[in-house]
Length: 150
Image (cartoon, rainbow, N blue to C red; front, top):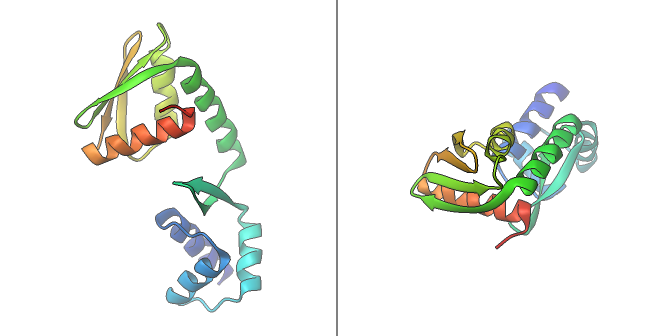
């Protein structure tokens, strides 16, 4: 039962923004699991869940320590190489420092953002094929937040 509950918790937090233990307990109960606050608290600890900030709110997320270390490296490459960005429908055009486009594109691909189908890089320009216009706006917002730029 614990393995199934843990799998359900990971599924729930990957599909929904769950901000509190109470929210998580309620979602688990809706899915047919009888849980107490103590059980949910223990599950959070065992799964090593953490809270991340999304749109000014906190939510639970699964953070793999190895993955988060790699994400920091990719983020550093993105920060070091990024110059500007613009959109053309569902194509995101990113300008980089000369010679950095390939590294920045590889970093973005490695971040596995679901909105991005793939990136093509030249010397100082990247074309990102984004799944929709709305996703392009979301990706631009993510990049702005990561880089703290307007």
